[in-house]
Image (cartoon, rainbow, N blue to C red; front, side):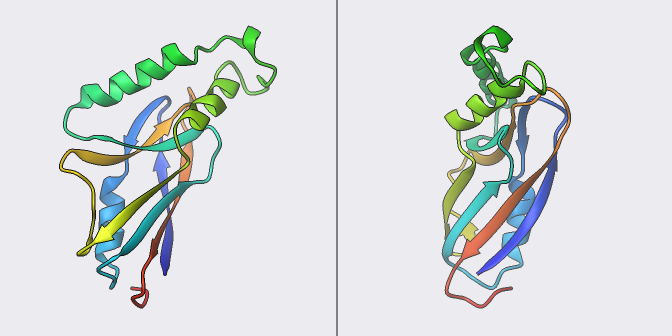
Length: 141
């Protein structure tokens, strides 16, 4: 078993790719097969697997969630940190805080156009921590 914590810096709402540091870390591991997980240590952002070829996909995802869960404090009690406070928690609950991906032949078993993204639901910049973990029967690298 091996793990590391990476940081993704955000500039506000949107999808931020983090496939590259994951691939770099996995390349350092001695394992060739196993199960990879990524877990974000926050409640107002999430993790998604999404198309990585057309940037319009990530923009459309962001815009759709804006329409799905609009920032309107009249609907929520938990607004201590602003209009995006409770909406961020809801958007996080509708997506995922962890991803599990098979690790086969030394690579993530992602499809051709799939990439890993942190989905920031808050308006302001944040530093988001993601725990990467590889479970295998090989010795840690």
